[in-house]
Image (tube, rainbow, N blue to C red; front, side, top):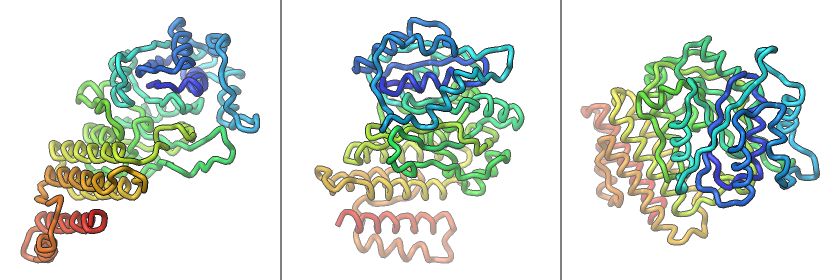
Length: 387
């Protein structure tokens, strides 16, 4: 659980881990160089205990004053569900109460989510991993459910459902919703996913899957640190290094919607360019894999989708907006060049006309026609956004 100045939400997030029905859990809390006094006080309190249980989790932070979050004084049903689970002591095994061994790890400098998750992953000792953001919640049955699903299916990666919640009943919970793009309750081989052009439809978030710890260490599947958009390319690498995946629609991850959350930050220059960097990581990963020929086309489609998302969400008051778009185009061009598409980040009309002819020439291979077509698509984006 990476933590950066989210003290207002941290107590509920930790309670949702302690409320799990699965009996033995290790919680690694990574302090990502927080500066907020409330966050630091809570982390210090958790650092003083070894085991958290339903009996002591409230007492650990009882002396720390917490802000009131519920708008109109009514807590969301998700918080009520967590508190009920703690009160009624729901356990997977009746004679084995849930125990959470907690460890706080401190980052010397701010690593952002990817780097903080790497620190926590290296500190863990359990057989399985699941990532939780410090302002979100886990449904009480989630870990038990995904553990049993993994054991029953034999899948390397188990993806699961989620839903949004908020302390504000007027919040639009449809924003930033995530859905798996693969069939539910079906064991899917890596080869089938790739051959059906579904590689980039799989969950693109780190917190949406459950897997064996060795998947990180055996394949060096750590996150890019100090960046935003750290998990889209990570999910692709995880699928590429798995033999099979399984998606269960059980909505076990509850995402908090609030104004200060990372995904609500305004899209301005630096944030959009982080998306461009992620495109290049994604292209390099697929180029280095043995599935490059099969996945090349779907990777291109994802790159264009990501560009359109970033460009269309770029705020009107972004300083040097046109220059930011030029740089994003350049990053997209760089990613496409990795995929063997010789493109220009400043295409002329003649360039566009030549490639427009090229992708219609029937005697060219499908591979080369796709390259020409992709060059035309980039040229069209350039003319739309940069001229």
